[in-house]
Length: 115
Length: 115
Image (tube, rainbow over all chains, first blue to last red; front, side, top):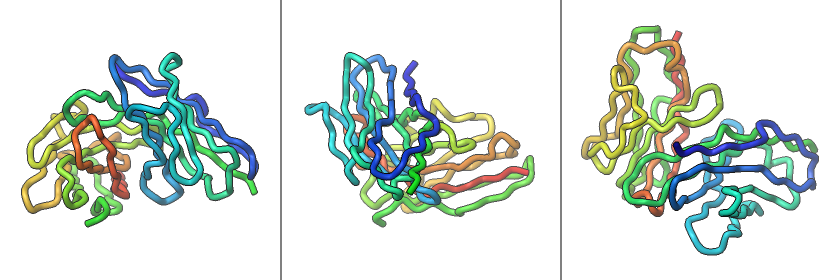
């Protein structure tokens, strides 16, 4: 069965610290991968996505993620976090065959940035 | 519109009552998805549509949940005889393309509280 796991449920960092949030997936075939962010009181927004090609993906707001096929991982990184990065971060996956079924989400990582 | 719209924002129902949630996808998007998020944890995929046709309903608890996407009307998710465990935030998402290029845009959600 397809699944996505996020290792850290809560992360607390100081401003300017570097960030890495772990994400591992389990899928039978080719997979598309996503990171979504949910700021307090707001809806899910797409940070970045990987479909194919360069495994290092750049997203919005200085975020990036690296697809490592051999490790079934798609970790999210940011070199220097800001207070405004406080939010819930969700890794998601989708098999890239035909059809339109839903994304499989991880349980989320609650990131708190302390000023 | 340019954003996925969901109504109502909040919905409170007594156990056993009916609940109906609405979603207007982004104009031009053919695919609509419903997700359930319980206790700010993982998202559970419920059902997807391609225009007015059900595409994948593997996540739907069919005995009480139903959904429709009719032409020229918002999509709807209806829960007959709500139970306490139906309390959750229900998110709708839409996308332009099928699974292979599946960037989904999420609405703000409807928070359903069953008392």
